[in-house]
Amino acid sequence: MRILMVCLGNICRSPLAQGVLEREIASRHLPWSVDAAGTSRLHEGEAPDLRAIRTASRYGMDISRQRSRMICSTDFERFDLLLAMDRQNLDNLKSVYPHPQYFPKIQMLMSYSADWPGADVPDPYYDNRFEHALHCIESGCLGLVTRFGNG
Image (cartoon, rainbow, N blue to C red; front, top):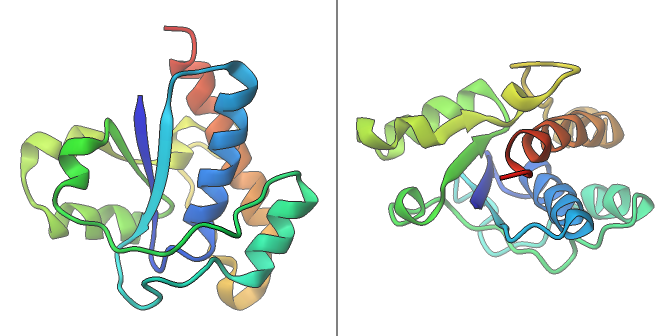
């Protein structure tokens, strides 16, 4: 399975989500791949936010080598799932590449969460709640691997 994590700038939530899912698929020896992208070019080419890097590090993940990139049309074909961190990015994904045949691939990460099903992953950029965002992301990723990891 190929999964793309998507947020706005690809410097906070989606890099954390990539790190969490990479950790989970490695611990389960799943033949999956994961990447991250943003719906905006605002931070293109930049490393993740230092606060995201530090938060990930406290939980045993190194996301420092990731670089922000904007979603591109080929992503809709390359990936099996494009998982948005919030409803705004879900809508942005559908408007960037408005081809209905790809809409089933475009979902909310938190639709897999047992704790907060369908909730937005809050953007920690302004309120500095990186740990809370990470816990939300972990819940979504655990639900995802539980749902698809056995097949």
